[in-house]
Image 1: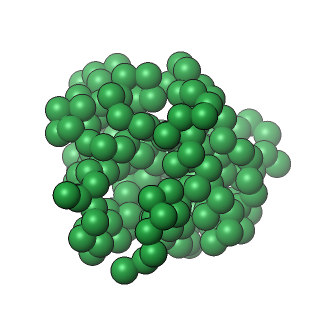
Image 2: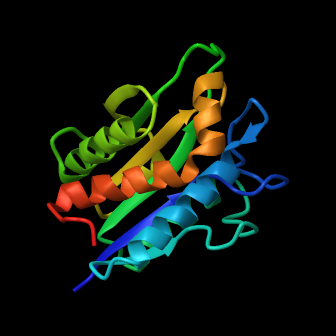
Length: 191
């Protein structure tokens, strides 16, 4: 039986509510949408996985405000029901020197934590993004309310010129790294 992965591409298209970060000419929701599409394509090509996306098209809008956007993402994953939830984001900071990737989980030493470790390790090994570690954040709605192991991947800082270049030019490589992290977690070899 295929492992069901729900990919949540963080935020909604520009012009709607729950839009993401901006920096160095980049828009978070565009980056998360594209990385999610690339990751879904990799997973769909692997018969061990079944995949669904929160934003199957670039114009998909979830919810009518920030709260309902987040709850709709969780509802879609819980009702499927997914086996794993991966939310993709890009970060921002007022300090342009802050850089790197990190992965958030609800709790340490859980299945989500182990998955997060594998994903972050592959992102660091397959891109030039710094390792900011796996972090616990109990306030993130998509980690609190999903009924399956859930991770939130911050793929780099739009506000840092080094990370912004990677987020602009290497989205397929980031998606591939997340895919490799998923395979590592399950002890799978690439197909």
